[in-house]
Image (tube, rainbow, N blue to C red; front, side, top):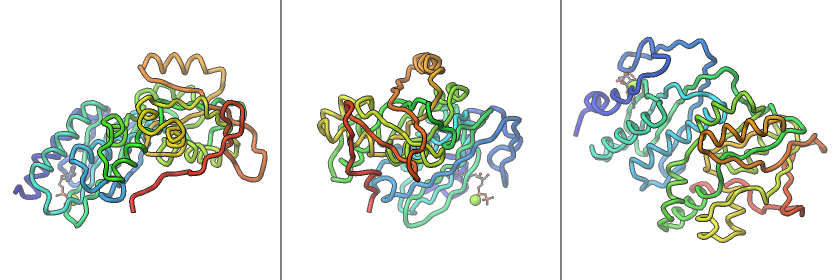
Length: 320
Ligand code: ADP
Ligand code: MG
């Protein structure tokens, strides 16, 4: 088995490709990284623990894509362009060389796909696999959760529910349909789209806890009510076929793990938004409106075909 330094040299130093734009002043392999940018720097860190955030038997490839893309999702929601990330790993001693190899090869492909190099990190051993990804992005004007105001439209990028259905199957010990498995392990955060949409958007959040729960975070941060038209929330065919319409709707609203973005924007930008979405080959749905705060606390109210709609379950079932 390779020693620690050999492992870092072989697997992690090559992850500094493709080069960061703008480039680092001091890149990976030194005591610390040094970077400089004229733009605002957006940073977010996420930790994923085996058995808590993903099943303990997930493959190296699945862990790598899930950890990196769920972290990238925060940059998407801020409207930031990915710049570089750093990677901290706790890996049990029992993990074989081919696990490291598979993990690093997957990240190399991810780096190319997102134009997102890894410029530093730390590697140590412990009882449980822990992957911490700190992402860094650049933007002119970071989007926040507090920019929503009455009269704005609520838009959902892509669709929700498949990842939660995939996770539910994994938790039952079933082998989920490949689309659902991929939705959980290989989410598609709308990174490039959100960077392009940013000038036309007032607030955004990435969907990790569930559409309604995360929309609630915007509502509270913005002191607004949200009115959601459930019939406008898109449902994938695969999802409906595998769990039925009623459950599909519940998962789309409150499943979580989607790592897409929900946002608000003024109606005069509707056309611009749809045009940019089409140009990026993505989908977007206008699912509701922001309203003035009526009571003491911000709420998300829902209708289905004009009738009030209540959901029993909010948030999602974590691992035990
Ligand atoms: P230090 O003792 O200064 O923490 P390390 O021996 O931990 O240095 O790491 C040596 C170099 O390898 C550092 O520049 C660090 O950024 C890089 N490195 C270590 N682990 C990783 C990793 N998981 N991903 C990327 N780079 C890493
Ligand atoms: Mg170290």
